[in-house]
Image (cartoon, rainbow, N blue to C red; front, top):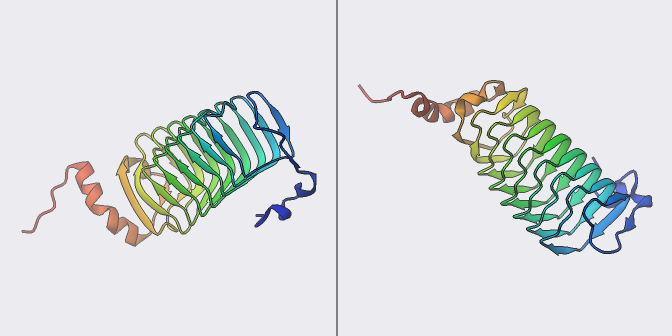
Length: 215
């Protein structure tokens, strides 16, 4: 994975975007840098072989937009709607997402590194070959989502919501903290360590109505 903008295979083709992106825009080899966008309307746009660096989005929508071969570093999303978006071969580095609506999004071969995800709606989303490395996921809602080949090395998972989610080959062993707020039975299809299982035991007991008491 590229560690810097210059490492991108398409770096020499990048050109600064002249003005904010527009709805239904078609952008190839665009570089969005040092932008602060308030309530942007970028719905149904397409970005290919592009980069976002030091960009902040307050509110607004990118609904139904598509991102392919895109690199994002130091990007902040605050209350932005990215529902029903498609992300393929994308990397988020040192980003922050707070109060973002990503319901129904499709993520394939996506990597998050050093990111903070707080109160994110990923209901009914589809994640395939997604890695969260050294991230913090707090109150992230995966209800009804499909997660396949997803892992969380070095990440903290706090207040995760998994009600009616489907997990296939999900590896939780690398998580440094694992707190499931809802949907424990959805862990079928996930792999945890013996220690994580012990930590989850009280929550499993509550979920199944088992009373644990001293004799």
